[in-house]
Image 1 (tube, rainbow, N blue to C red):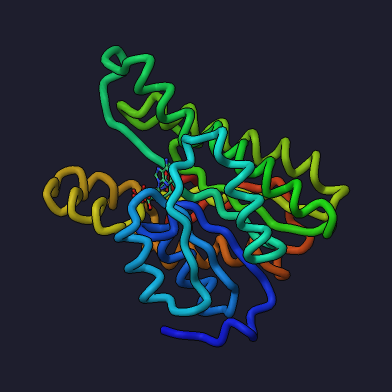
Image 2 (image 1 turned 120 degrees about the vertical axis):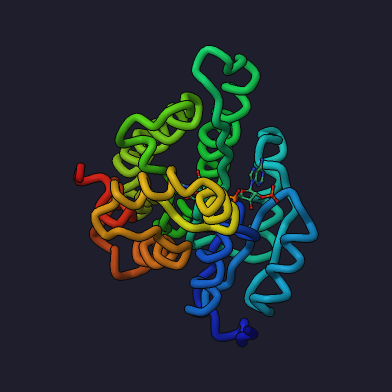
Length: 252
Ligand code: NDP
């Protein structure tokens, strides 16, 4: 895929855009002629994604837990690419472990990546959006914020925080023309999760029987929702959470 970057009218920043859901989000943006910057730690993966997406895509190798580096990261991006119109806070980590075995360090590492880094990056990007009085931020939550899932205490805390932060940011930033929304994916078949479920048929059956639509979602399903929030179609929508979960959250 290669597009003409001169025709692009908007610029998006997608964290974790080289794999999983972030990859599908970046792919959707590029297909829609949005200049897309992807961030991650693994340069090989970023380079491979960039090659696939073509000239509308660029990447930055950056560990988002380096909070002190975020202001410089954003200043450099603004200098190089101009206005950032869209920020997708997609990068996130998870860990499955019994509640009593989770260490303080493990808990804090997940909160740092999934919450504090999202706050710090959003704050700096918003500062660059303010002079333009426009912008869209899409945070990626999870159905873990809606109901109890075993052995993911820190992840659940982090995704619940993201949904609260989304509402708070939406209220604070609405007068400045910046919208903030949240997509909450259900069971999505990324390479890794699909393989894990295929190796555990019992769990797969449980997941599918709990999903009214009876199938796993795809990263592209999530990307469609993110694209909606990020663009003009959602111009009067802010502070909301959209489950993309085949009906899981309606309590089947
Ligand atoms: P992946 O593990 O496939 O991708 C996560 C991405 O985040 C990677 O590209 C990784 O880049 C990046 N990342 C992680 N930590 C950092 C960091 N410190 N600095 C920079 N980049 C980082 O995850 P998914 O695609 O599955 O998940 C994406 C989001 O969707 C997450 O927020 C997750 O919680 C959420 N989600 C996913 C679901 C699913 O079924 N897959 C369901 C519900 C929510 P690198 O490897 O280069 O560091």
